[in-house]
Length: 341
Image 1 (cartoon, helix red, strand yellow):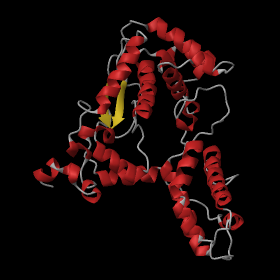
Image 2: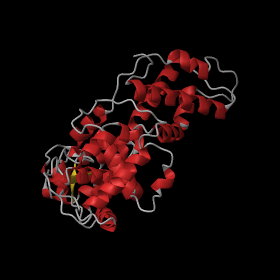
Image 3: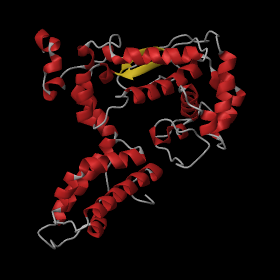
Image 4: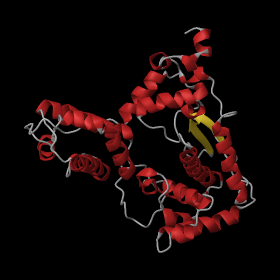
């Protein structure tokens, strides 16, 4: 890789770009939209009389290292070309808009406040949120309609771990113009919000016990190539799906072409793929990459079974969307796409 390529990497094709290491891009937060968003976070903290402003840096993903009061922001958010590549590889850009980025920054800020002031050691904190020392599960079963937790990030993330519960509660509390008392009236989660409100008043204008932390997985130090990064990232969301679609697909589509106006089921799914992807992702909170893999699997199977659509296109879209949503929800609840697995 020569110096010219390094200088002109923004113009390279995706295949060429994937050969670069994360540290080759020499990315910084300064001068980007991220700098504006971080300053917005600091302003929101100041408005609440919280004088601790966590250091933010570019990392390989969104993170706040355990007990380290610093915020890692994904490197790809620092450049539009890398955001474009992220979208191509993962079908989504986590934190790619101002609103989503601020939601994530407020969440990570909740972790840093927790660590900087060692709030997790307090008796009342443990009573409301649970034990900080509890192990993180590989998968978690959430209750979508539970009113014991706030709803801030996707996947009902507050239900994942006591530390995440606090971070999510803090993020809701910090969000400007959020009338959380009204929104969560009658919810058990309101007790947690009231506690955070009292706690933040207690630490207002006070110096933190821990002022900074280690910048783990800092992008400028990572020699990992982008192609390896994405191979690992995609693998993280891959699952081995059981081959049980046939009977369900035959309930939705037909094995006989009834009229010239009907199209092949595989072609139909490809045409409506984006619509299905967006709708299932919105209602389940699952990664688009996972949903897309299921959809591709169904397209392939429809071709193999030589299935066709019926006359009611809207009804067919509704049925296949509901089916994929069911697969995703089974997975989120049980860890598998089949019930009882």
